Image (cartoon, rainbow, N blue to C red; front, side, top):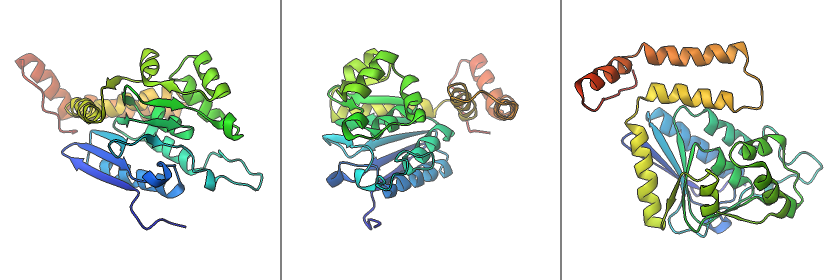
Length: 264
């Protein structure tokens, strides 16, 4: 049944978007409706030409997200983590989103929510945040795509320990492994730090960022790069090097002033 209450709030501040999950009574469990509203928020941010998007929970939560909504997992013997499941669609949407998405994390991150946070381009987390991947605890066999996401951001034996024991990984340890980009002291500092990172991205050349993010996505995909993919990436780069922003960046460098990029 669709929840009539908005589960997501999307705010646009200049060229920075912020998507806030608002399902605290269910610990922001990633139901089909919550996922659909996050995807809609990303579409809104793209239409507003945002150059960076922050994905967060409401300030002060103890649980950023509890992961998959267990009540929606199938009981008829079908694959619970199929390719076209809502969360899988959201992860692909974030990877394909043209500008960086920043996970601003506080509290516990469980199960599939780890996949969500780790799929974001950067992670800013409070020092007391934790990440626990719990499928073995719930009896849910994880899929290859999910394992690939984890192996792309953490060492193999750390991933094995997380999956085999369901023991949480602290944000400080995650930062030591390079998973968390910025550690924040508390909730207020989380907002400050994530906004600072987003605003720094927002002044970069957006066509270049789009091209580079697409290249990262292609290079870290499990599938080999096809000629079509290579041509698509080259087209994104060509658009950037033929743009007014390219000329502006070089002129600003020569004139020793900040560049003003407009995405054209």
